Image (cartoon, rainbow, N blue to C red):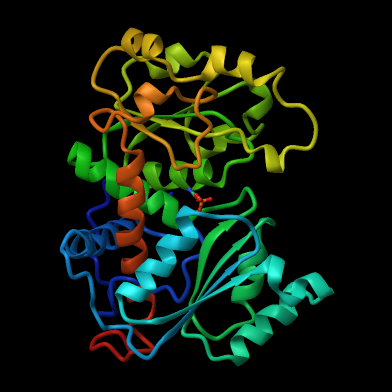
Length: 330
Ligand code: CP
């Protein structure tokens, strides 16, 4: 992992541009200054999105396909809104209504989308690595909207943007990620993103929901939620990813809430000014109580959704600059 304190310039020695990647498949492949560049670029879209007229036409004439093989509210809609606000023609493909249901393979689906000359394809898939498989078969940039328990890079970027705006910076912050770390692509992308930018990351959850190799991601590991919360700056709560669980990982949601639910008592006991985050969708009364989730002073849950649109606008803009022949991006 590159040192977060690396003060490398944002251009490469050969003078090439700040973001040399064709796709956005994971956070693991990004340098610290590349992540910061993406966050910086999103700021302009936060400003635009707060105006009554939210339109920019830089993607006019381009086609963006959102191919979602798993359910989504936030990611699908924010990519759709992002593309439309930038002037692109946006088409959504829902797997349930597609020819996947007739037995068409993922690779044949990718080849079909490619033949339609999309200018960017956004993919969510239930299998880790499926987005990479599609990216290898198409010409245009591919953006990973979440693949299995592997990565959800734009979620980590929007979370990073939220933390940076609320706390001033990411480096030096202590972030506690609580819940189903084992099945969570959000946890994985956030751990890599936050560590790359110099945050201290604690993970906490039942032993059954902590990956055996979690220490390889350079995090502090806890099973006691109160201990993990004490002294942290940010608490990132995750839901139980029941759709990815095969078998029983916790005794019951009630038991889980007792040990790992974020409650008023627990937050008060931890002390300090802890910012509470959740990528959504949340299960009220399980990993978080409503009084905290709905308090905009302490919780950033709706702000994260707002940052998601801006962040995805930045990603679509940056990844299509080469095909749009933007000066300096050849
Ligand atoms: N956070 C997130 O990915 O939410 P959706 O599943 O609603 O897209």
